[in-house]
Length: 130
Image: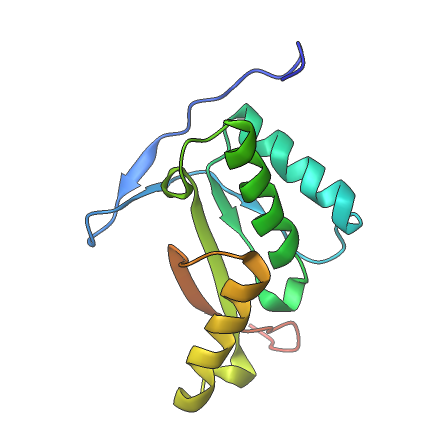
């Protein structure tokens, strides 16, 4: 950790499941840096205290997030996968019951993880007038 990086403490919220979720997270939406730079950015985020990360298959950032978590585990910045809360999203065209599990397995494979903390449907709605 560089001298200018100070670890922050982020409060958690208790979910109905009994698990805790950090109230502040880091999104990994599209238009992000190239893979290696994104991995480095995510490692820096974990180093300063981020513990909640949001990604999606459609963003193209799942692999980088998985790599960053693996590297921070290897470096000892976090002690276990349980110390980070990972959210990913199922694209709206894959919500048919026969498509959900294969999509989740692809996500887990890209991230090299055994589980997600939260898996939600992602719907792009820029054409919808409110």
